Image (tube, rainbow, N blue to C red; front, side, top):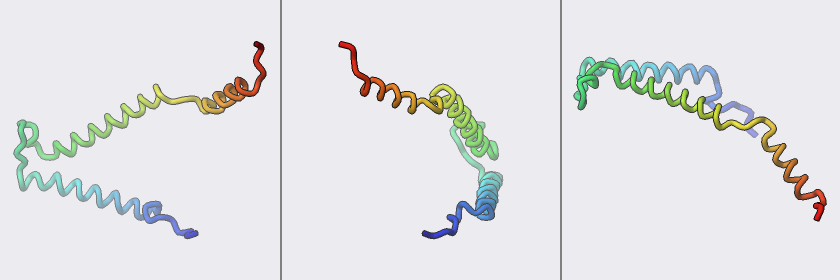
Length: 96
């Protein structure tokens, strides 16, 4: 088996990708100063509004996911308790 890590697992490559993503984001925001955006609403003409909107929505999705995780999560022993109770019901003799 190949012992070399995947190229995305190398910290140097992860840092390079972050830099590339941030440069592309900055270029797209700066491009709005050269080529104005004509949206349906007045606030869409603000430079960088789409990047800000994407960030806010992403942060909200993470927050909602964390709240859902608090509501939906099970205990660490949820499945082992269930297996033990199933074994007890299936293996134990019944009083009829």
